[in-house]
Image (cartoon, rainbow, N blue to C red; front, side, top):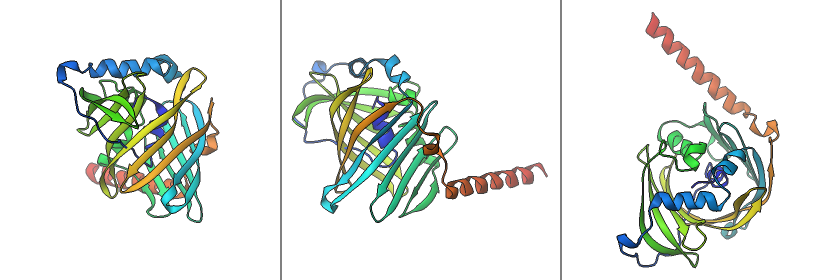
Length: 266
């Protein structure tokens, strides 16, 4: 989806769609690229979005069924650095990050991991500025497939086929042009997980509109991500510091690569 806010959140949790209404005939559906461009303009324009890649967002992550509410911090900086931190009560901190060199995560359940393969490719498609704007260098094709309803709002559902082969769906409001829903299949350590989301409560921060609420359905769980504040400008560098466990994994990976190169040269 073409806004950094959504992509940052999908570093650790992903998204959902509500009930659908009957589709209209194909010849009544607007062009998918036109819908994407309309959305970009509706939230402030391409230049404004790219100029706001340095930001710190704070809010909360909630799972009502478990009585869980946790503080959330999301930070980004050029060229494509992303980090998400969630302090889970009585469990510890969940941290995930991405740069063009490495993607990683640390949590109390699976420990420290470096992401690679399909999992890394999927994350890249949610973090790079060009991917957020659905540029053709990242997206193989886009197609409007139906007119539907999400959260009581009519929208056009657009199929996104990524260069990696992954498929997802965006849903753009008929009236406002804003993105109001998503469906995606995320590659994770537990395999492929399909999730759907409703996106709402757009608010203006400086020159851009940002959705401040996401209600997600994921693996039978209902989750809510809410943003309370957005501060543009260079985030605190400490937010991007690699945890010691991740640094150790990177050093081990580098040592392995060097050993393999030495064998090949001998």
